[in-house]
Image (cartoon, rainbow, N blue to C red; front, top):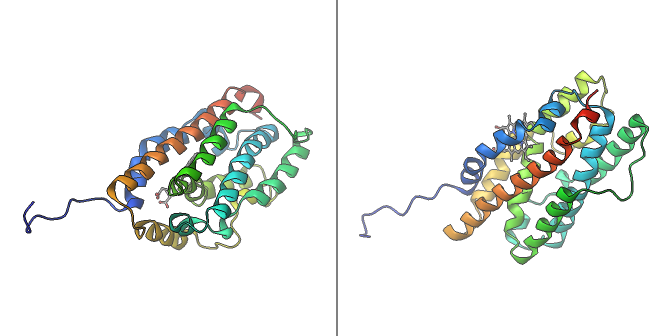
Amino acid sequence: MTLLDPAPATAPLSIAMREGSQAAHTAAESSPFMAELTAARVNALAVRDYLLRFREVYRTLELLGRELGDHPAVAAVADPALDRLSAIESDLAHWSQAAGAPAPEVFHSPATDAYVARLLEVREWPPLFVAHHYTRYLGDLSGGQVIGRVLDRELQLEGRGTAFYAFPLIPKPKPYKDGYRARLDALNLTVEEQARIVAEVSVAFELNQAVFAELGRDLPSYLR
Ligand code: HEM
């Protein structure tokens, strides 16, 4: 390389994460369970079982966000304004009652167990947390907003049972997401480190897909 050669072009992290997960995103959107949820064709039991799984995912994400918060990559994304655990708890109470089926303390979900196990592994290299955080919370601030509105309208919920989709501390998702991406792009990472994070986004999408596939196996009992 001569002095006149440009530096090797590396896409900003936020762009690389988005581009690296575009195909997985389309697949997630069109998974049978998500398609039925997005169209509000599911019953209360389906929403309960969906939330039961993601309660464990968010419990772990939020635990790690606090535990690893001193790491600059984790500090760039972790934000209590995003926390979903208590919203999920309150939605679970609503949907369990609506389904006439109390939320079990213990339930069997290999896909959830695998997701949580992988999340806990980010302790070995905390920047991987960013990939998991992005996949869920930026999704919640994007497609999640659409899903929340459709459920509310189609099921005439008037706000009941949709706390998971509501971010009272983030009234405008668009500027928040712009700031989030800017913080990702400002991280001081090597090309190799960035590639590891981008690869972990694909892992995160696969773990989500596995949860949707698990729920999809019970789809006939989940339609209203
Ligand atoms: C099932 C219905 C879904 C719909 C309708 C949907 C829709 C969308 C839309 C419209 C955006 C773009 C928003 C923007 O430009 O700011 C988006 C972004 C995103 N979605 Fe989804 N989505 C869905 C499911 C999912 C799932 C299941 C995940 C992850 C597990 C996910 C993760 C993301 C992420 C991470 C982004 C941010 C992309 C970026 O700008 O970097 N989405 N979604």
